[in-house]
Image (cartoon, rainbow, N blue to C red; front, side, top):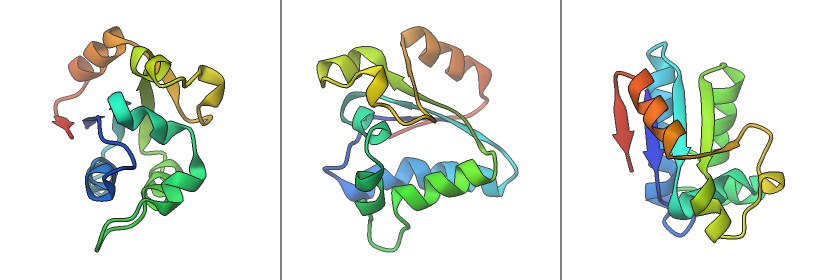
Length: 119
């Protein structure tokens, strides 16, 4: 599954939904690739923030992300480079599980997956 998200920590419910969707794919035996744009680019920079993002009835982003990684179900986590640069996020700011990418990566990931979900 390929998941594109643009929502950052300012909306906990919408922020956690792409990750829960990825977990759903994992539970079906699939893996997930994620591409973050706009405000979602910050999700790859601060583990503390991920631990605090919690929506009613859902786990934190950090819990789901940890579960995806522990089950080797997160193929790629790509952060839109122009979106990150516009928010003063550099490659050195990213977690070790995230990489900067471009529209070319977005197109590649969409082509490689049968299912694309956007948030």
